[in-house]
Image 1 (cartoon, rainbow, N blue to C red):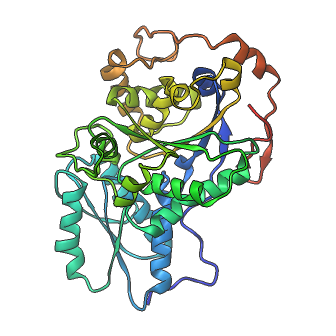
Image 2: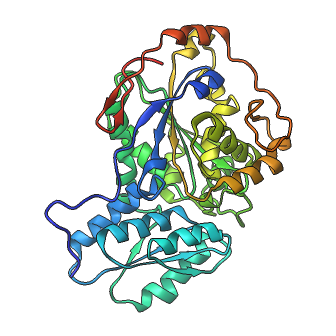
Image 3: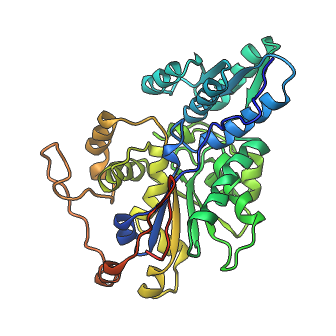
Length: 383
């Protein structure tokens, strides 16, 4: 019989939230990074998937075998949680899933079935051909379930404890909608003395099922996924995501594959952190200068410089140095996001970035940075 001990270890952790001077200089405001890439599974999915699976084991009356369909990170979160719970997991992935991602799933002890051109087709196969034939099977929804959203909502609880300044905006990427549903749930359920932060939901063109719905003013389904950000590969967002998109607290936008890819390259140089293209979409909003258009219209430079925006570094493990180098070669000429001179090891000439506004540099000379509180890096004052 599956069961948890009296004090089970949760399959996710409280992640740091740190300030980023490079991104703050580029965006012109204070940028904070919520480092979900540090989760045990490598992405924010550990929260929602882990919460769902932990609850499933608590309520189980017999053996449990977990089944999850995923373009990558949800499956990896499921496999990681199953490993920590000592239970088996089977993951169905679409044919677009890379060998790199499949190796990671196998290393976690998961069984893999690769089928279908997209997540929806892989999910249908999982339910009809695998789950239906296993009496011990427990389906793990990758994004569309309240328990998954509850897990993602814990990000907001942590941000409230970690950030001692008003939060004006929170930026995240959107695939099926599990992350943004949790963030919106957290934002809308809590009081904010300085006003609710705006939640900016970002997709890549070709995986823009939410933005397509917003533009059409109805919940629509994409014919297929054409973006390199395969982790965002849901041809239709959850019904709850569509409902949240109609809230004035939420803003939908899209970026190109090239900008998402080059944001990954630039972030590796700026933060020494590898993230996949889905996370690059979030970062691109800061690198391209979109934040001020959304959150700072009508503000002076000084007023905008004091705004605080959290980027959810959702992580994602479908990235290595070779992929990063391939992105640079393919997309550098297609993107406005450039890499600093001297940062390349390819011998190719790079385009220099523009210098930050002088008042931002001067103002930050006396910035106060927090120490470390346990494992948490806490911001004690404005950047």
